[in-house]
Length: 122
Image (cartoon, rainbow, N blue to C red):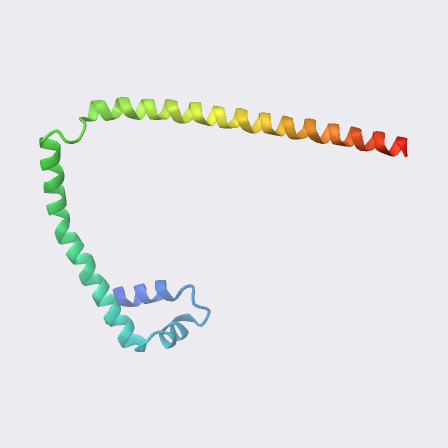
């Protein structure tokens, strides 16, 4: 293969297709040529995004320098509080679920008992 990376990508993209690579390409507009054109376009888009990455990092550093983002120590404290709150919420939800199950069992038992009394009265 003269383009092993493109072929590996094609194999990966065609994996879910029952017709294999040939069926995958037949289903695509433009066949192999269309697929390669789309792949090239996708690669160019990825390169554009990668070029923007340093700009985004520079902006993030600028925001951090202006103290618009909390320092790491504060984020650690918030993270611990968040974990504690998550645990408390989980416990409360579990208690609510257990109370609802108990209530349903009690209602079912009461309805079964009333149904039994109706059968005896008839």
